[in-house]
Each structure stands twice: as C-alpha cells, then as structure tokens.
Image 1 (cartoon, rainbow, N blue to C red):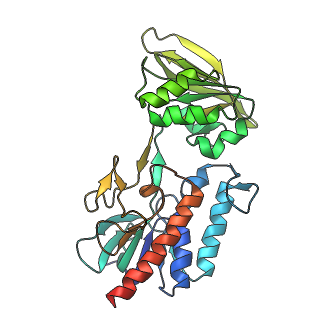
Image 2 (image 1 turned 120 degrees about the horizontal axis):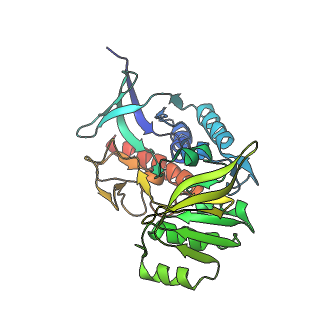
Image 3 (image 1 turned 90 degrees about the horizontal axis):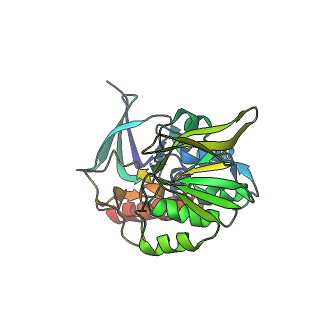
Length: 313
C-alpha cells in the first residue's frame, strides 16, 4: 500500500500557473501540495532566452522555473516530484493517484497541467529544439531580427505565427503540404498581401540542417509531396505551427471542455464545471499561452479556491 496524503488544496502541474498558485495558496495558509508531473517546470524548460518575463530583461527558461519552484517552496508549499495517473472528481474530497503509489485527497483541486505543442516527430527537429526550432513565435520571434525563417503548417496557428514573425524576419516561408490553407479567410488575405511572406505549396519538412558546435540552424530540407524532390531552403529559424494540445488526460471525461479539449472555466474566474475544481494556464487558454498570463491565472485560481473553501466552512 502506498502513502495516503490529504491537503486542502492539491495543485497538479508545475509551470508558471502551478507555481504561482502554490505561492498564493501558501500565503492563504491553505498548506497546499503541488505535484510536479512528467515535465517539472513545463514548456519553459524547453526554451532558452526568455525576454518577456517582467523584471528580467533576459532569463533562461529553465533558470526561471528553478526560481519559481524555490519561491513556491519558500512560501511553504510542499512540492512533490510525482506524476498523476488518475484523478477522481466525482465526489469530495477529490482523490488522485500518483505514479509513486501515493494517494492524494483534497478539498479543492487546481489544474495547471498546461498544453503541449504538437511536433512532427523528426529526429532533426528534436535535436534543434530551443536552438533554432520553436513552436512559439511570440516567445522566440524576437531572436530572428533580419533573418530568413520558415513556418510549418496551414491552419490559423501557422498563419498567425507567420504574420507575427514578419515583425522581425526579413523573409518568412510558409510551408504547407497542400495548395490551400485551413486558416480563416481574413487571415489568408492578410498573409497573401504581406510582401515578406512566401508560401511554398505541396511540401513537407524533411530535415532541419545546422551545426552542432555551437548548435545553430542553417537551413531546412523540404520534400515535394508528389514528386519526392528535395529542396534546401536557407533558414535561421524553424517554427512548427501545427497546433497545441491541452494536457487534459486526467479530466477530459470529467470536466466540460471546448475547442478540442481545453478546460472550460466560467468567464472572469478559474472555476470549472465541477465545484471545487479550478483550472489555470494553458490547459484552459488556447489564445494567449504566455508565461505571464499563466502566472496570473495561477494567482486567480488560488484566490478562487481560498474563497470557495471559506464558503464551504
């Protein structure tokens, strides 16, 4: 039999939303437990320079998350390196099971499991993640001022990222496997009118090409879907824009969701469809997906949980 733990507030996830919730829940004297999950620190641990975190002109993503974890612990939050394998929201107290065998019961739950960018699964893509390959234009576009870059995809995400990247890049090549985009018409019109963007139809990404010492992207090899012909295109940055998937495995059949699985919250709050369960950060946000907005929602979730628990008493 594994250990049994009870807490007033169980926080699941350890990105900016989870750690901020831990800080605020600790300050509210709720003695929270935070379970980090499979990727402690979340998506920021796979980035390098972060230049849009207030108070830091530049900070390494992993370093920022180490600081957040330390801050959360200093406030009194217990941080546990476990992975949740099951969560039962059908009755209170809520019950969660960790991969360690520990059973956690909680009066309130804050979900901060985030979202994951969808990737193509290429070995070269994996090799250059954080070193020229990115899935977040608003995070990393600034680093490619005056450079040629490519965007992979054909939906709203790809077109929005391509348009945004024209603020920095000298040229953006949008690579799509078909000859028409899935994006909204208004976005397509804006893309076609932008002189910095050149679509490349009927192609898929075959390989990211670069150097190892230091790690740096220099080009991409793309393959024509019909002829199989391979073409090399110079590029300093490669943005994979084929969408994001919320990490909702624990709750997708228990909470109301929208837009492909994002947890739905009551507008202006972090309250989900189950009273006592709150959601913060990228698991509920398909629009902004920024560290600072996730942190803000983590604050909201802890305050919402504190008020809800007080009402129960």
